[in-house]
Image 1 (cartoon, rainbow, N blue to C red):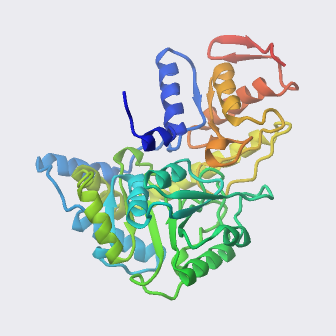
Image 2: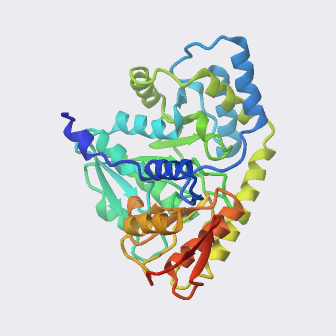
Image 3: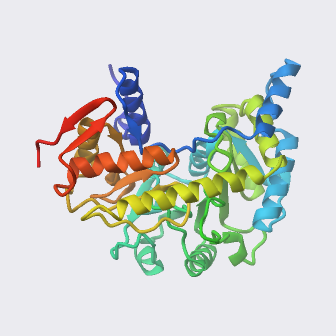
Length: 405
């Protein structure tokens, strides 16, 4: 079978691949613990369920405007005013099938062949592949001090006349880091002065801990929305635990939204009207569900860090947001892909290799699941890697003896 050169160059999504491997093992009855999954365990908000159910009950499940239902866009406008202190118009918004399609639509709209897009490592696994899918060139900036926090001097060093955009994801997947006010101010000013698009992936922007707040890029520009280079991507997947509804949105200048509407009309047309009704229900409903989820995730974060800190040789910066951390496992193995495979095979624990996020020797661990999964999962990892840990362990109803250290 003949496939395109471009298709051959696009890497498989490691997170989806590991999800599939875990599913197959579970179907075989294996007691797999999934510390790689990128979704919380909560149920969708009742207002989202009622909104989608009401739409289904009408039986009127038809096409909607490509850019989204007017009532949903009205809810997004209120959300932007409340959480971003920015008044936007319906023409500044497009609703898409998840934040992933939003990002792809943005890149498709602005990147010409050979244009460069700067990515800040650690980055979300799909960023480089999306850039390549629109024939752009991903340019990776990797911090050298082990903090995972980008520095403007490193970014400025790689920017060229071909640089079209910079993607910022804070709170950050996979590290959980929240970028500083100073950095966000600097990068906004830099992009506005140099005519470079700044794409802020804000999908975790309210899942922050310890009283911290994620800086909002709009705060640091004096340009109006139509003349700014800021593009905001957000959605309901993480904040409301509604990953399966697949709904996100972009806020950008009108002319850019018009281009994205044209692109989306030729690909997916519009988001399912049922998902749009659910998202509207979530955005307009009681918001205590968000704080409840945030507190649950913060507690899970504390448990994860406490367990990892008992592990000799593992260093992990404390996450300030999201539901991920990125521990350094180089004391045990440098190759994160081989380490992830080893832990899945020996300990039945799913992790995600750090190399897929641009940081080798680390693993991304998710604390979006239960406390039981976190504690037992780290216990299994410790048993598999640490010679100081007990030599025997029960996994499910089987007693296993470590014979490789």
